[in-house]
Figure 1 (spheres, rainbow, N blue to C red):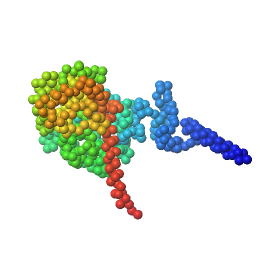
Figure 2: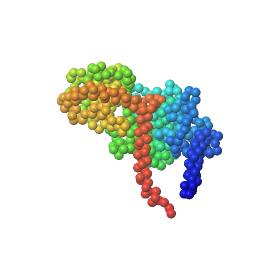
Figure 3: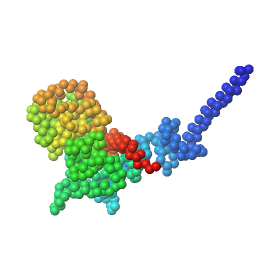
Figure 4: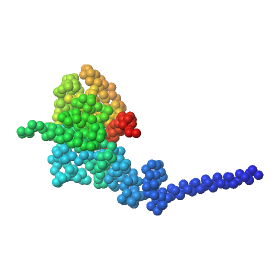
Length: 478
């Protein structure tokens, strides 16, 4: 009797399970073919946005490229791989790591310093064709050029014709931005416009800084955050020298902290960017191995420096007559760059010694040459050190040890061929991280800097939110 009563219950349970299974399957079917379904589009998009693991098969064209199933006018959701997205459309701000608002400063602050002149009321050069982009001057000017590459990258982020990673995307509404970019070519301004001309009382560089401060202080974006969400590139140690105290609340992109007081520039809020190396990057297949590099240690550059650079002359007298060591004075003039490029490519180790500031371009020339850097600079800050472990491909020597007779040679002699080869292989892997180029590529210097900016913005937002815990509550009106 009891068994007969249980049968209907089992039957009902089975019916419920089957019904639920059919309901789920039909829902998936309807969602996948939603153009013909009765489910509202907004509901479907909400499901996609909030459930990234949702089962979805994208359509592909005959070339194998992913095609968005949404109508062409709907760019809110792009159902395609980011690598494919950069080939077929402008970057989508909703999926970018960093949304950047860039001020439309007049050309006198940026490309105008390069001699570029657009048509009337034209602020920016056309960047769709890299061959038409105004070039940056070579020589030592080029080593302090991050603002040029970052500006180009932002300008091209809204173009479907330029193939680049969608790490940072320019937005037109500052309220939608994670960071505000100030496109001032400050290093070039210092290098080209610092000398007082004729009857002028102040230089063009100083005037530009004054105008920039006035502009920024008048903007609601600056007032809203006190400049803490603004990004200013000041890579040359003497750039924005007159304005840095007024603009020091912003995120600064620097070569090092050598000429900055800690309250203006520090590792907590600011970014260290690599110099643009002046020697060519050696392709991996052309890089000489241990036995193909006859020179043990290479240095060529200015020997007599001030401040922390005094160690250069001490090392010069210690090493200049040693076998298999090249330690000589050199400049970028005449064939200086070519000689340095050739010399580094044929050397096992390359010296990077502090100069007037803790850093120098020589480190990045060594990396591009796959010559293991020997860093003698106690106060140096290095680019991307939260991502890269420099001890994998560099040797660090304290200044007090380096000037001890025989210390450096004994250290280099203790590095086995196996250990050197491991560092050399790692150098070849990370070289791209220090290459500036246009258009940018995944993992290059431009891309890495944007990732660093995202980290700093996140940290600044964290501090702001903590400060707002009680500030807003105490001002509430009941």
